Length: 136
Ligand SMILES: [Zn+2]
Image 1 (spheres, rainbow, N blue to C red):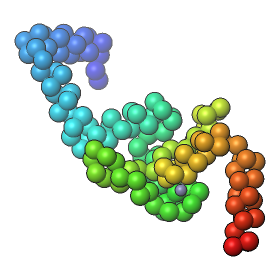
Image 2: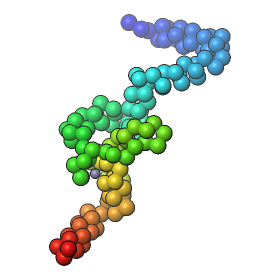
Image 3: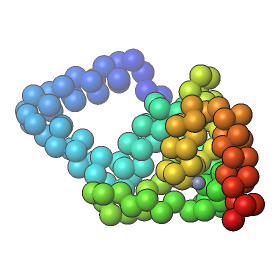
Image 4: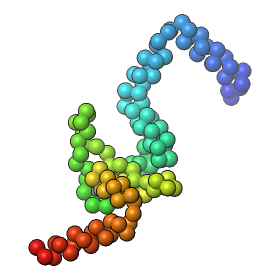
């Protein structure tokens, strides 16, 4: 079992290593964050900080939704400008309570945001559009 004495020795050794190897810790951190394991950990930390869920919880939600947007039922199509990969579904959450609702495509997430998360407003917009669809 690790004792407080062991932990203190580890901290002392790590401190000595950093002093002997200036800049290497930052380089090692950069390499770790670029590795597959580091990318997942970094993403998980971002998700946890922003929404209180980790990458595993995101994946469970994604699987439950069968990989499609919870509103329109379509997969994400927006391509990230730098990575050129299709973006991940966004984590939709109540901005008042912080409660996560579901995963949405960029378009639906923005639609809800522009409507200020007002369900009645969105319903009125849908009814407005449907009124004109019947005329065409
Ligand atoms: Zn959608």
